[in-house]
Length: 482
Image (cartoon, rainbow, N blue to C red; front, side):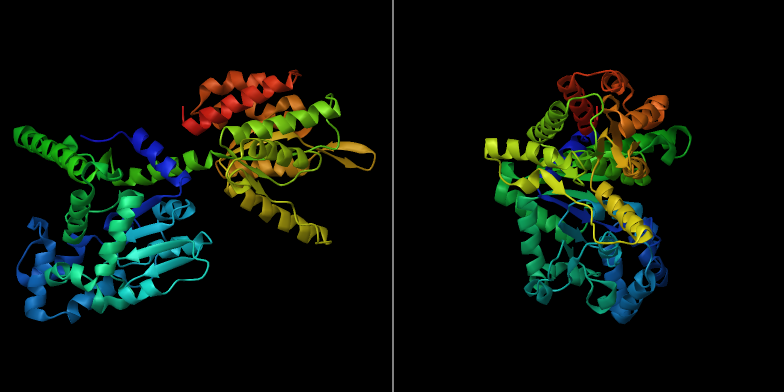
């Protein structure tokens, strides 16, 4: 019996927040980037043996047969030929690299995971053989365990039956590390076949060790569909047979290995689910954007209390707050979060605040504008929601709408961040609120019921405590996905 996508997303997001999420990546995720799966890899050597790999289920033995008669060199060259050269990471790789996942396991020979991490500005620590475990890459952001080897060391990859059978003697350090991670982390298996004998062995040992206390893990499978089979009774019978077999396989994985299967219509739907995980995770981090030379029609103390209360309520609801320390509001954002942290003896301030004061040293206007734009992009990339308040600045004797707040809004929209302009606070936020309300379906197609909450934070509402309540309802709805 399969697990619902909603349950898997919720549990994996929880693991991300608890910093114990891990992924195990198989060949299926690399196929979308142009690399081959097992059957395609071994098809040419199967032909030379007189075998059709499409009819074979034990491909490791097929590779062994070829080794028995031709040796290892041609197999190593085959890996070089099929996985050599660099291709761009796929969307799935990029989403995974963008998440705070510190543990990656893979049976793949390619470099897609580590390249995706580097592209995301992270430093991977790659473990290919036992000596790698003794060395730690400075300031690493993630560890990538390549348990079957790497294309750059093709002659020492795990490919044939002999190598699989000797894996636990020759690569015991991998078995030990994976066993520990399976015990302590929540895994998401992607593009992976559970027929790999080394993984089956490790999972079975975990089952014996922990029995009912094993951690829950998740995997993706493509759902068996009627269109996969021929027309007529034979096709219908085969469809029923494969559906029953898939259901039994899902139940077996759940019962024996605590791996819950999530069925997707097609493998290209997996990045969509990963993107949902990313969105749900980032929705717990909220940018408070705004500046205030004046507080519109609100008394200054009331406005300060509003920002303070909003920040405190966000911290109390376990949102992390990002702030560029905008004029007239930055101190209140900090004080509100600190009020909650200190009054509850919360663990540490870093769990509640991301402070990004804008750099002030550049005197050249064009260079400063470029730096601030890049700075805003980086800040927006870390959040899932952005709340806009006030948004004005003084130019000479005039009070103008803050163009920086408008830019942060546009950057947030381009990045897929949910924007929440509090129109009641006036100036840029009121203008941005009007933009959202004029095209609400485009901004919130997936949350049409929130329109009444946005009405409540629009111009004319002077009850700032009520505005805080409605903003929190909007944020909680987005975070929970409903």
